[in-house]
Amino acid sequence: MVGFRLAPAVILAFGIAACAHGPRPRTTFEEAGLLAVVDTSGAPMPPPVKVVAPRSIAAEPVEGPPIDGTLLRFAAEARARRAALRARAGFPEEAANAWLALAADLDLYLSRPLPQTPLLELVRARITVETEWDLDLRRYGPASPELAAEVTSRAARFATRIAAARALGKGLFAKRKPGKLRWPVEGAGLSSTFGMRSDPFNGERRMHNGIDLAAEAGRVVWAAARGYVVRAGWTPGYGLLVEIRHAGDITTRYSHLSRVLCGPGDAIEPGQALGLVGATGRATGPHLHFEVWRGGKAKDPLALLGDAPAARGTAAGGY
Image (cartoon, rainbow, N blue to C red; front, side):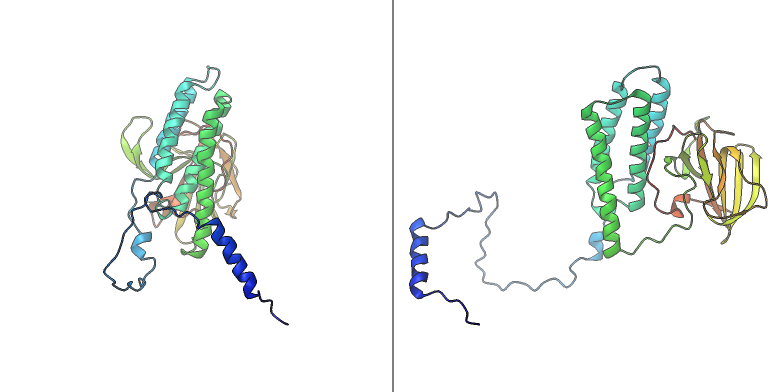
């Protein structure tokens, strides 16, 4: 094939036409808001760095505490507010102001670099925000369009960051191992975490050996793993309780149930129904108190559970 070539006369004509229009104006550094740096040393440019992304960059210390504490306080105040304002009509100003304050806290958290917002923490935060917003809408009715936009936009940002964290985890970081245990209640809000806390009945500081999952009464409670039932019935403080023994010296407890659907000695498969959410025993409202024990010591269940399932509307949970 013969290549296409422009004649010298044609090239000259293009050049004359370009000169007729004059040179294009150039933007200076000052006009662009940049500082022009002139290097007159003549030194050669240094070679590229050997380590493009040092480990220290991705492992910077977190600039602030986890968002869990802020959300737990907000959820507790929201429950108290719904109990006190249930007779009023319309979305109350107190609740609207609380949501606006929370939105500001969420913005600070979401401004952190991605490595400083762990995936599981993001999932817990999204579940709590969506659950509490749904509960407030059920109790008070529709909020103003401006407030609704503020809340839903933050929930959407959490969803986007969760998707980004999962996508990056496939390519840049080690994959998260599947959870050893499955969540015992679907779409429940996390109303209390594992560790020291103020007792809701007397205010004393005491150890909370599990997590509380807020869900409406009657929601089915599922087995977190394969095992066999070693206890099923009334236990002081726990109310109606199911205790299951698993492989690896692991025991799980499901308490404050309204009904027990299994008995001692039953073989249990993962996801099998054990009982129904309730508020029996030492509880202030319907919820599931879930404990995990290994080697005779209480462990944080969140460390053994997989990613939380998507939140669905739930009723206010107690302690």
